[in-house]
Image (cartoon, rainbow, N blue to C red; front, side, top):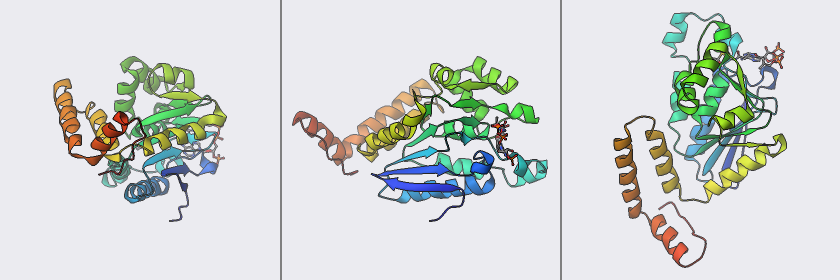
Length: 258
Ligand code: HXC
């Protein structure tokens, strides 16, 4: 399918989705987020995709929600359309692993989109921020909740209240990103990580994703029980038999998602 605001390539079981509105630093408008939800759904349904990478340009992952699109909207417009709620829910429902590969600005909704992915790899030039306060608003697709869980209350408050940006070194130090790499290595590193994930059992990968995400939603005790039950359930799969047999036979496993 052809998109106007995205470029999608599938290679070695990885879908690379590139946000592509260079004239507006990939600002997230309804069209882009609608197309992104559509592209993710189609990757989810495609057997040739086992992991997804979302990236932007070198200058911007995404500079936030599109301010031009939002500026004249009323409360009633925002509320009745549940502005970006539908798209955010659609992204959250994807069960295949998603990596955000961030170069340049990841601001406002851009930072929130990166945080909606399963983990973030960034380039040395990355800048994260929640500068909505400068526009007289606040984050609207999870920034106050997710950033606080990633970096703690003090840094999250600092960023949401002052609107300051966090560079790549601080983002790594604070636990917002999993790896920082030189700018030129960003896509190769993210693709290599995605290809490594694509070699695993998708059943185990989906279970790992579900269990880690559950840690945000429940108590430690319930989360550990949830994890243990998923661990038990994986013993009903052929992939568990194959994975353990391959280890004992000192060979590479051939997972079949069964
Ligand atoms: C619309 C945007 C945009 C945005 C940049 N542009 N960010 N358009 N929405 N969020 C456009 C500019 O208007 C400009 O278009 C072009 O992209 C290049 O941007 P410049 O500002 O000229 O570039 P530069 O001087 O390098 O500054 C980069 C920047 C700055 C620091 C990233 O653009 C900036 O501060 N952008 C806004 C960041 C922001 O406030 N994000 C939060 C948005 S609210 P023209 O046509 O003039 O060339 C949000 C809420 C989420 O995200 C919740 C939703 C539910």
